[in-house]
Image (cartoon, rainbow, N blue to C red; front, side, top):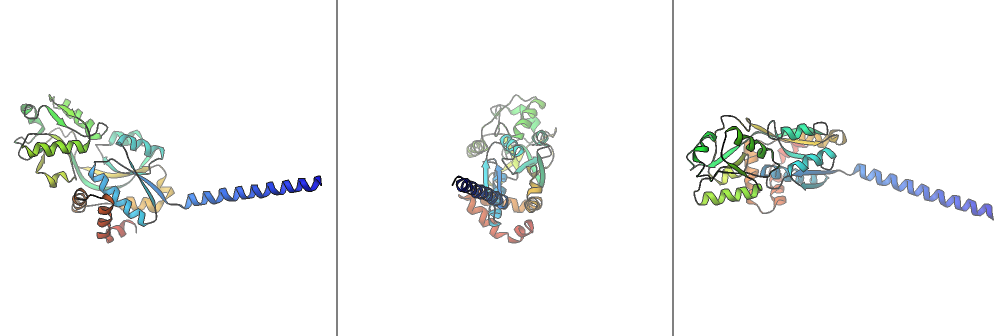
Length: 289
């Protein structure tokens, strides 16, 4: 009886062990086969939001479980370096995000260029009668000695602080959010008041308002910027097809301008993105070929 009881216990133990191992193997296989991606973006940065949402629509159709992470730019770079965010599609190089990319150079990697004619600088409404940064100081009273900026962690914010020192301006940069900045711009233009703020193209602000960049003789923001996609280290090896998609993803000026205008006018980002994707099947097919 003791022998039978012992054999019975051993048998049950073996069954449980086999079931446990088999179950673990099944779970691991499912995890490996499931296509998941987390894409980071900064809310209010129109170009990044737009390309992120059309990418989301495309990848969902391709069978990916797509998660979006909205956070400050510094947090997105850190999250990407730690593997919590797979991709960030709004990296401005070679100037704006140069320091951030250098900081995590061994933990993130370049995948592709989304747009190659981007520009940053100080912007004023066209009715403002000055045309260069060097003229700001002489008219500081009209601007209330303020440059309206965006988020404190943004690369452009740091560049603007350097510009203020380089031009020896008696100005203070007022930082909040991109949405708040554009609200101030809209308010000033409605009253034909003078305002100078941090602007960039591509952005729907240039189709909504009559604006101009101030000439920057010291080239503090650099020449034309490129909007790039970076990923966590190892994505290329984990999903070569996905990496290939991001390497091909690219928009020209007309395409990104149309997308930004449609996104700004719409009330539902998912619907606008899906409509744009449906209207550009050949381009999408090329990206995912």
